[in-house]
Length: 185
Image (cartoon, rainbow, N blue to C red):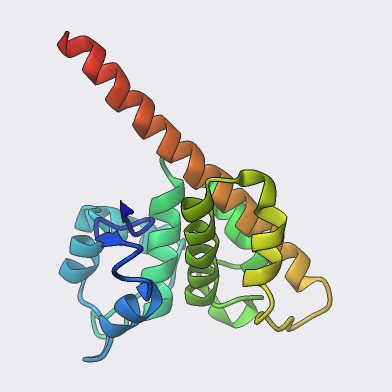
C-alpha cells in the first residue's frame, strides 16, 4: 500500500519498506539536519519552521542543525495542523511534554512519540479497523517505560487523538479528491 509517511512528503510502500523509523533515523547519520532538509522532508516553508521556533513550539536548532527530536516535533505539528488549531496542537503536546521549548520536562521524547504513532498508523492502514484501536495502542505502548506514574495513560490519550486527527485529515483529502472529480465532469 502506497502512502506518505505521516507529516512528511516522503512516499512509502508499507509492503516494501516496513522500516520507516530506520529510514528517518538514517537522515541523521551525518549529524543534524539543516533547515532546507527539514523543509524538503515536511513540505513546509522555511519561514513556517522558523516561526514555530520563535513562538516556542520547539527548541532552537544548534549551529543551524535540527535534531531528530526537533524534526519529529515539526512532523507531529505538521501532521496535525490540517485538522486541529495550533493552540490545540500546542495544548496536546504540552499535556505530555510541559513547556514546548524545554525538553527536560518531557514525559516522552518527540521522536519516540512519533515512532509509536507510526506503528499505530501502520496497524490502522493495514487493517482499516478503527474498532481495534485499543489493541494496537496497547501493543505499541508495550515498550514505553513511564518516567512518572500515569505517563503511559497520558501518552495513550495523545496517540489516540493524533490517530483520530490523522485519519480525519486522510478522509478530508479523499473527500476533496472526490469533489474535484465531480467538478471535472
